[in-house]
Amino acid sequence: MIKTDILIIGAGPTGLFAVFEAGLLQLKCHLIDALPQPGGQCSEIYPKKPIYDIPGYPEVLAGDLVDNLMEQIKPFQPGFTLGERAETIEKLEDDTFIVTTNKGTKHHAPVVAIAGGLGSFEPRKPLLDNLSKYEDNGVAYMIKEPEVFRDKKVLIAGGGDSALDWSIFLADVASEVTLVHRRNEFRGALDSVEKVQQLKDAGKINLITPAEVVGLNGEEKLEKVSVQDTSTEEVTDIEIDHFIPLFGLSPKLGPIGDWGLEIEKNAIKVDNSLDYQTNIPGIYAIGDVNTYPGKLKLILCGFHEATLMCQSAYQRIFPEKKYVMKYTTVGGVTGFDGTKKEAPKAVVKAID
View 1 (spheres, rainbow, N blue to C red):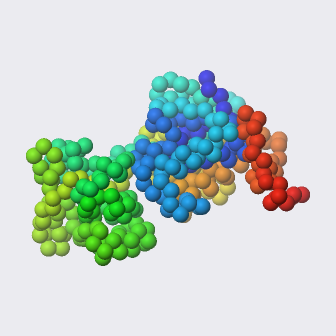
View 2 (view 1 turned 90 degrees about the horizontal axis):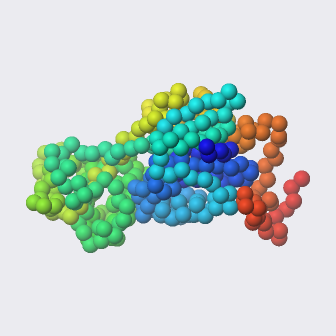
View 3 (view 1 turned 180 degrees about the horizontal axis):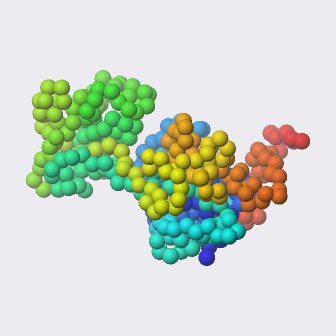
């Protein structure tokens, strides 16, 4: 039996940052993740994808963000159960929980924080008859290593942030980048839309809208795609080396969906007026896995939710204690191994 103060289900950026915030409160964390390494989608799906909205980082690769978070939480020595999926939960008479994985590993904690991102997921695939023939042979649904596309002809389909961001990134990697979207308007960030338009005007991206890919061709590997203009129905064949349809992920909560939690549109409803607690006291949901009025699925929002969750968890675990928050610039950071990073005395002012 693995015992901890806060059991975090999901080792993505939000779950990892929760370890840091809990550590400041001297609370021990253990994380469960079905993936074989920490980092969630940032490690598994797009480690080389640049992220632009993390405070203090004008640009940071997803994999580097995970590395930095792991370094940040090192003083607090979290435990990990990786490569296992949280399967069942049992609430004991003392209001603590036992969570068992699909491999039978049991975890005991007074607080459970679900930070499972989008849950288990599969890419949404285009409806093309011979798609499976070219999977991993010219067709890919995610980009793990951009260098695979060095000096290659790449066609990306999609209209969201991933399609826009990767088109921008690969413009300096691939010999030719074509972006196809079924509408003239994009769903992604306005800044990204403007960058794509600038790259198009500079001749670094071929932009085809409104259009969609209607056919794949090639003998042993993908060699051409057929693109149909949806306004004229004219079909054009384009020679490419790689086709990357980025239509998002189809998320599933998996076994967590059977835990008695209130679910809305495949997300866990929480109380955002205070602490992101679910309808079951002691179980919280933070990050992309939760929903509430005004919810934004951003990593930085997950960081905020994790911070407030940890404050509430402390009060649940120690109802008789009153916690007085101290800024890390004043108190420094103390890990469970007893080491402490002191705040710089010359730049802090004592707070009464």
